[in-house]
Image 1 (tube, rainbow, N blue to C red):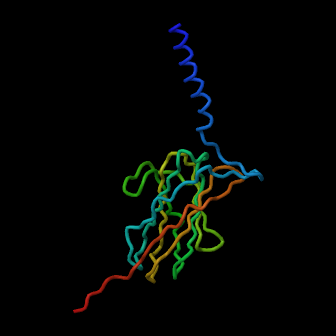
Image 2 (image 1 turned 120 degrees about the horizontal axis):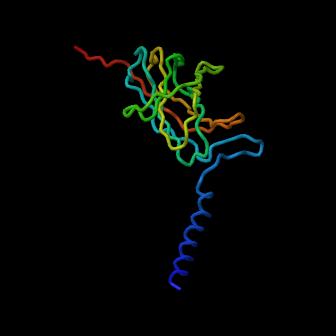
Image 3 (image 1 turned 90 degrees about the vertical axis):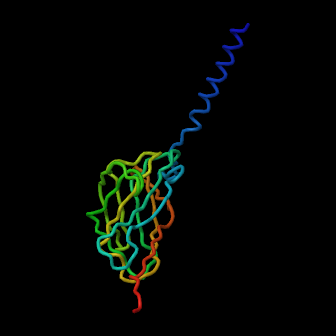
Length: 187
């Protein structure tokens, strides 16, 4: 009788685990028109630059994204759109780069398939050569020709797209940069 009880107890635990397994694995959302979207979109963790003074040449704007384990789909591309600032910031597309990890804890470099400017100069799209799987953190470095000459707050909308042919982008939030002129002292 003891063996039968242990057998049924084990059978119950295993069957419950097997029943719950498919429900805990996230799959991509497919909309009624066949468009693929994230179950849980990536998160914009930070937006930063090492140089916040105006007019600094060849600076890099770092955008760190986390693709949650429950995303349901890999990250294929990210679009950045300047939505505020008194000047349009121009990016040097050929010097754009990406890597695993954060700005302060850089991992392996990631290959980019393409970097494209939008119809408006204020938009840039970065497409990964190999989609970033769920559970990874990545940082994209956008190289500028110059920081803006006019001080103030500059905002960039960040939108992520999963891999696939017919995909829906999802907004991740706003990257905020504040630039100020060089400080002067009176003599």
